[in-house]
Length: 462
Image 1 (cartoon, rainbow, N blue to C red):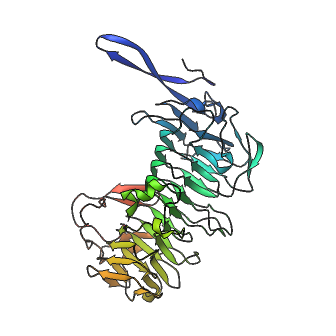
Image 2 (cartoon, rainbow, N blue to C red; image 1 turned 180 degrees about the vertical axis):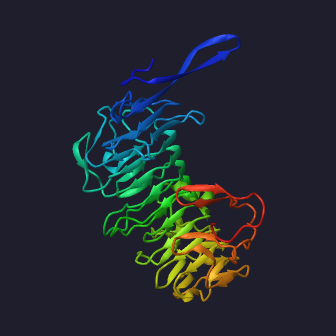
Image 3 (tube, helix red, strand yellow; image 1 turned 30 degrees about the horizontal axis):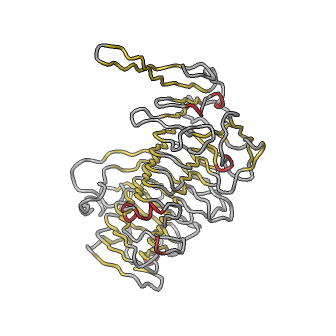
């Protein structure tokens, strides 16, 4: 039997071989953490010894858990390792607060200053690449300077780029229904990681005042999907982007993305040459999202695609497929939908609602470079191709709907569903073959629902 730090519930799975009972017994432990539970605190969990099928339940309590830890364990596809918050009586998520947090003495791992919860990289685990991990139903906060914690070097300050969740290396990770806020970065995923899914999380109020290098989410890995998330504004005075990504195989579907210097900053991979070489690096899918640029947000560009390192040979130089999004600007001045980093970047844009609440001429589609293939969309009448010295090209593939009002139920209340008289109803074009289908829509907030399987799709995300 595995040594334990606190009483546990065991689930035993017994393998049969013919008519004989095998001597092999696989134990899956369930740790119950919290008030009146077997484990009074998070440090009682043997994080360094979790095995496939293990589950950690962290129960809500009125005061935050001021504890931090590392996950450097590996489950299997059928028996993932799951860390799950148990909500309170009114649905409150357990709070993990990095400010003044402590760390289990047995956990000896580097990079403690870079995150409240770290995934991958520990001196006490034999798993070089952790994987098949689910982290869900927790409110994780407080990973930023000048906050401090007590770790292997005593009282230590968080680094400037600390995150609520810092993923150093992982394969097959699900982050679900997390609240990630009040940190340098809400989420950070590093380049050696593979197959990460971020779903139904609320990521907001991150960044460092006066800095452009910390973001709500900053990710670079081989295969990552964001679906059903609510990306809110960054901390006051912070100039980072909402979602900054350098990944191969990026999918951003059915999210609500509001605020940030840019809502989406999709640039070049810089930490893993294998990402640049992957065919998936050349195809990026952004669809089904509500994307909002507010008065006072830093940059006037919604989406930057290509690269920012200055090493242009490694830029994406592929296609951004941008479809079935509802894009809204409430700025009084001009905005640009796309900034491409070179003439070798392309956007295919169709099925969207692209609307500015000020004059139509304040909606420009491009900045200076690149190719835009413009299919059927709804655009605010009076839009312009660009307000810059545009040297790229716009190919019009289909005529778009234009007008003053796309027919939302309530623009003021941010209800972007379509009223019965909207010209966008049933007006979407068919998707080109090979693209991920638009099968679900975002529901405020952090929910998605299936769309009817048949029938004409509406323009936009709703």
